Figure 1 (cartoon, rainbow, N blue to C red):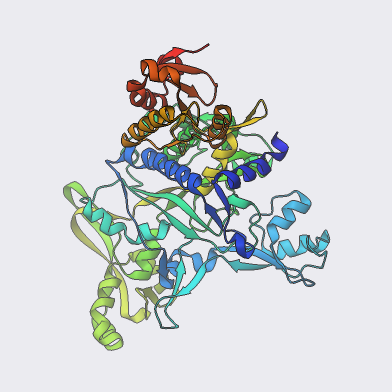
Figure 2 (cartoon, rainbow, N blue to C red):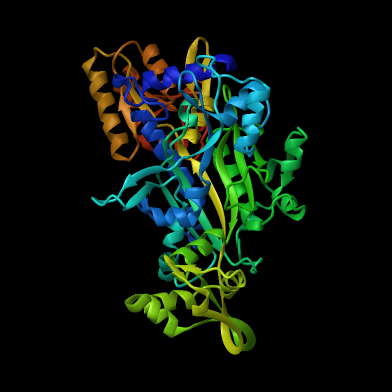
Length: 582
C-alpha cells in the first residue's frame, strides 16, 4: 500500500472534504491549499492538542499572544531576514522556468546540497550537466532569492512591509510588554499560533511545502546563568526516550540512536536543558497524533544548514510514504541573538533586571554621551538618541569605537566622537540580563498531513481512517437502522440532538444501507457509531460500534452521552461500555 499511499490520501482528502488545491476553478496556484470542513476541524483539534501540551500544561510560565501578520521592514532588517532568509534559485535559459537549485542537485546526484554556496551549486550543475527537468534546457547561474512576501503599508511608496515568514519576531518585539504584564518573571514562554507566508520558489510537495500556512510556535525566554530554574519541569521527562542523529553521525550515514533526555543532555548531544525538555514535549505531542515512535526522530542541523540566528537546531522528522522523512517541527537555541538585534535597531531596552540578595560594589563599563555633540547633530531628536545610546551594551559601543565606526541605534548613526566608554565603580542591587531563547516551532498543515497518512488503513476492501479518537473531526454518527421507518429516524434524531447539546461534534446519516453508512463513517474517521434499531423502540437500548474493530455493544440509550465521553476522552474499551454483540 505504501507505494501509492500518497495518491490515496490525496483522493480521500478531496472526496471527503479534508483538503484540496486552492483556486481550482482557475487552474490552481502551487503552494496554496484549502482545508475543507473535515480538514478545518482536524486542524483545530491538532492546534488544541499543541495548545494543551505547550501552553496549558505549563501555564504558570507560558502565555499566548497574537501579533500582526504584516511588519515594517525595520523589524525584518533587525531580525536578519532581509539579508539571510533566502533559498538558491536557478533559471532555465531555454524555457525560463525557475527551480530550487539545491533540490535539483539532491534529486539528480543524491547528495545533501543544503548549505552549499551559489558558486558551489553552479559548479555541480556544470560538472554533472544537470538540465531543466521540464524542457531539458541549460540552467543558468545559481543565485539567492529572498522568500519574504513584500507589500506596501498605506499609500506611501517608501513605507515597505513584509508578510511575516514566522511568528517569532512579533513575540520578540512584544517581549518587554508581556514581561511587564507578568511582573518581570523568568522563565517566560510566549506562544503564538497564526498564519505565515514564504514565497517558495517551486513548491512541489502538496501540503508539505506551502506558500501560506499555519505555525504553532513558542519563544521560551530564560536566564542562561540560572541552570536550575530555567526549566522547572525537566525532571518530568528526564527518562523519556528520543531517537536522535547528530550532525557528525548524519554525515557518516549512521542511523538515529536512542537517548534518554537526561543522557542526551549529559553527553552534550543537546546543548541545553530547555532545548531538551521542549523536544521531549514535541515527541509526546506527535505520538499523540497516532504516529509511532519508530516513525519519528530528531536530526541535528549542521552549522552550514542552520538558520542565521541558531546556535543549535534539531528538526523533528516523521516518516511519510512519498516524501521520506518530513520535518514537522524545528527546535532552535537562539541565544540572545534576537533580543540583542532588536535592542540595537530600535534603541529599546529589552533586558530583564535580576535583583541580588544584597547590593554589591562592582566595576563596570558605562556609555558616556557627549551631549553637546549629540544636541548639535540631532537637535529635537537629541533626548531620544541619548536615551537609546545609554541603553546600549558597552561592549558593542567599544567594538564600534575601536574600528572608528558610527554607532547604529534606533535608526540613527551616531559618530564616534559623540560617545565614549569609561569604567566606574558602582553599588548595584542587581544586574540586567538579555535572556536566552529556545524555540519550538511546528508546521500545522504538515502535522495534519502526516496524521492522515498514519491513520490510513484498508480492511476487507474498505478504507478506515483510524484517527486518534480525540482528534477525529466527528466524534460519532447516529444511524437509524432503516431510512424509511419514521419511528427509527425520529428516535435517532432525538439521540443526535442530545449528543450535540452535550458538546459533541456528531452527524445524523439516514441515507443508504446501514453497511454503506458504516463504511462512509469509517472512511472519514468517525470513531463511534450509534445505531437505533427496533430493539431501541422496545427496551430503550442502542448499539455502539467501534470504527477500528467493527465490534458492537448494546447499552441503554440514556447512557449514550456518558459512554461516548468515556470512549473518546478516557480511552475506554468498547466492552467496558455495554453488552457485547455476537
